[in-house]
Length: 258
Image 1 (tube, rainbow, N blue to C red):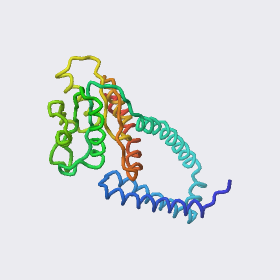
Image 2 (cartoon, helix red, strand yellow):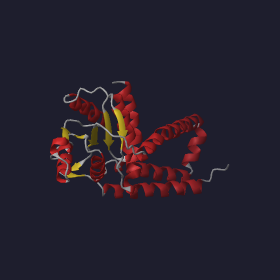
Image 3 (cartoon, one colour):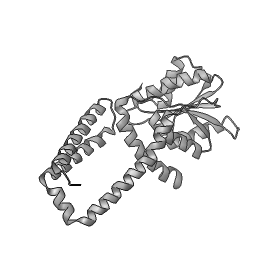
Image 4 (cartoon, one colour):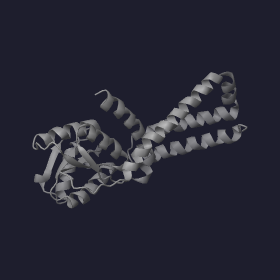
């Protein structure tokens, strides 16, 4: 099939502009990963200009080995993207109704002391799940990150108490700074008060984050279930793209090499 440089070049530039506009919109929600779409948009625009000017086609003619290597890399990327995003999407929709010993609410960013949109969605989901599991204790897990004036665990505890959850049911894990540490430190907090070797936990986190959370929970010896919280539709491209990279990091550094 003949390569239509005008079509592909124009399409690439339009796609680049869309990425940059999306990046600006994401910044309004304080999504730091939005920078990725700014960079991606610039790359698409540059590529489109190269295609329209004929530079891209000439380069590929002169460097056929580079072109073949590029196609192989792109094929591997597409295969890995499908392999990783499929369970991310599946577990993001899968709501378990099993009774749990502990409900584990994972932290997300704060704006000072105010829960971010992602964290607020987790907290709203947690209040529903807590009512359905009246005998379960609740672990709120999350330390203090940049721009936060209290720990995420403290912010979550305050929200739950304000919404009628007995303070005596809440266990605060406020040292973790990553999903792996969420699970590692939660395991230690539970083991300090419970000698049961078959702990069943119900994880509350956003849909995009559920697969990796369950993966790490199983790695640390939990029987893990999940009740994913919703995510604002505008944030789906940012968080799902970020999660693809995060799963790869987790598989290598948090599981294989740890």
